[in-house]
Length: 492
Ligand SMILES: Cc1cc2nc3c(=O)[nH]c(=O)nc-3n(C[C@H](O)[C@H](O)[C@H](O)COP(=O)(O)OP(=O)(O)OC[C@H]3O[C@@H](n4cnc5c(N)ncnc54)[C@H](O)[C@@H]3O)c2cc1C
Image (cartoon, rainbow, N blue to C red; front, side, top):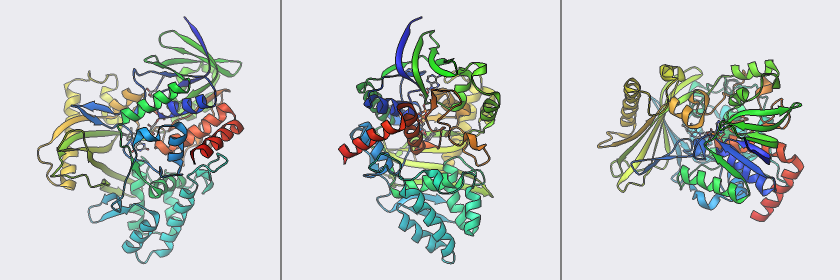
């Protein structure tokens, strides 16, 4: 068994782990990233089918305009040029919500959103003012100030335990307004009575500031991050999962990998789902009550994703994403996400269809692995895919001749990124959770920190928030802020 010394071990080479490695490397802190998969990128990494790139976990995001949080982060990480960011909603519409009896075009800016809501519900000015003011407050803080601090914390808006349902009830809005606001909750995987108001307002406000998609592929983005991590001095060990986190006198001090190799370090940053950390620790390393509480937290649902090529002339890319809403039953919403964008195949666009899917529906194949799940699984998967194609046909019109590229299920996601139950956004950030789990960047083991979407909030924005916090814990908050301030001064 060989022992390699490094200052910080980073577990997981997803967006969170790689971003953290670049930032720490830029501050002169030596890191070693350990990734279980033979390739880096986690959910960020797209994959090719028949020469066409299929996205896994990055369809769009915001805010990434000049001086906004995600752009600041891309600039600091030194990857902006390689992402070839493309603004969404340039024709005025950012998302189309298709209900049975109503189609609502979500405009691309906050003032236009206000106008659209007033057009739809002219008698509800007071409720609309309240919602818009909240969105404004939340989105305004989405940038780092010159001193390197986030202008305002997402939690500053209201109590962590106020649900979006309660917020909307307090605003006095009608069911129509309620349902429109619910669509975004559905996309973040949360029923409205569990979804913290700050979370929905923060993520919707982010898109209304500016929404973007990648002009490169997810694979190219993952490679850009991995290369930058290497340039800043990080070592990347692929294909060898961390099995044990070594703890001495209450302090995390190393890891043991599946291969038997050990690394000793001063600190550990885990860019993985928090529940995956638990079996890596010895029984006595964590208080039993903390562990039990964490294990009981629910996961966001998994998803079935279908990628297919459709004729570009018949189905031009509309420049906005679509949500077909099937049912809103009080706080629960069932819908399908559709995105049409250019593909690498001349004359064809790529249609991506995503619908939430419970892990329990796939449980009979729990013990199987991708590519070896058998005929029954293929059949079940294709039945769901067929129903999604029918939904797509009802939204877009007849699909014509299409080429099915791939169908993935929550089991695919589970095996790809080790995400428990194949959950899209990891742990459910429910208002019903115990407050000690609201921010998970610090675990009750010294020198062990969590980054990644599960630590604070979902998606690219959530990863960014937890990386800012987790790297600050590791490097020291003052040092990190000085570094960020200096980088921001260089960039502007
Ligand atoms: C279908 C889908 C659609 C999405 N759409 C969007 C979107 O449009 N916009 C958006 O902002 N976000 C979206 N997301 C969420 C986004 O993809 C994630 O927030 C983000 O990629 C999470 O990054 P991460 O680094 O936290 O985790 P991950 O990407 O899960 O990375 C974790 C890494 O850790 C590795 N790992 C696990 N266990 C070990 C171990 N024992 N040892 C070593 N390595 C280990 C994994 O292999 C993986 O590479 C979507 C997600 C999904 C699934």
